[in-house]
Length: 398
Image (tube, rainbow, N blue to C red; front, side, top):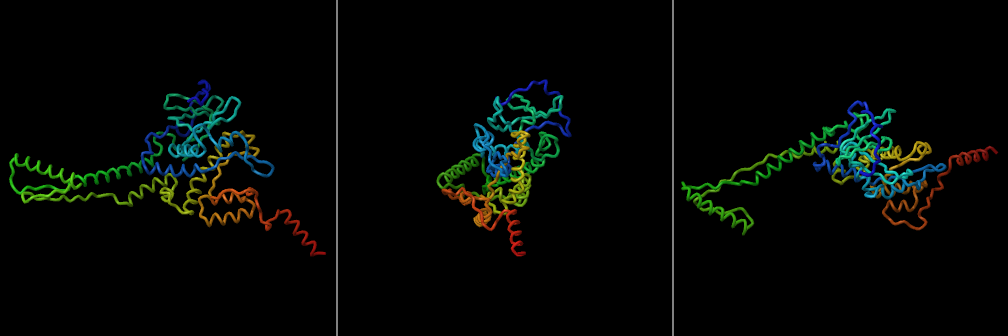
């Protein structure tokens, strides 16, 4: 972990007094062993990875994209291993797995931002020094420990209600309700698997119609084994003929499986825990279903990302001047064709969208001169409208 600069131990003096232990431990039981959990997190992270992070500043009365190092990293390569899409996928996945995600902004000696690195600590401890400044002490599987000022760490949280610093309850038993549901689901699936396997093993018995000596039994068994191997080899079947000396007695096998409604109920509990619906889970959703998912899950996530990245990457003075990190969503990309066309007509008429932006929304290539914004003459500046009305009234009074 060559990303950090070690702080002197004497700067850290005690454990932060919190409502619950100020220690976060990454999840002890791997919830990703559940297919339902893994796919649910993948769906959220995949959609969140489509957000477009930008460093925005205010110029006159307009918000414009900054040409800063921060904006370059966010748009092109947050670190040497990740592009913006994989970076967002990574941090959102870590957030939903651990209810916490820690991102370290690596800076050069002169303060230039060089990269944003998602961390995977084994344990994190919240501590305070004597002046009262909050630090996070990271413990990694490699045995290394690093202490960083909290103000220098981007910290995303979920279920932020029980602990003063960390999301969830900050303990190894986090995701307790999810584990219970997943465990029941896994037990049921294991039972179904065993029931099906046992039903396929013994289909019947061969009943001999006479008393046999041990020698005869061994001889009949050898005959049976040979016939069975021949049937499997020649006919790809385990059915063999029997003569009048024996009767075939079938065994009725009727494994009792759990009804589909029970499994559906358990899966829906897992999905609701992560804030997604079944249509999103199976990637087969309507425009209305996606909008509900976006507003309920992705929108809140984009707001938290914007606020937390702005808190750490921008100075207080920069934020006072209106600078911010915004995670934009190209939400109309997922709308129906009719919705896109209607939106284009309205947005272009208001001067909010250029021709090339409209063409991009429809999957078309840009055209020369298409970056200019056009506006309907039916709209006019409010002050000019007032002057127009005053002029008309003066004309009437003359």
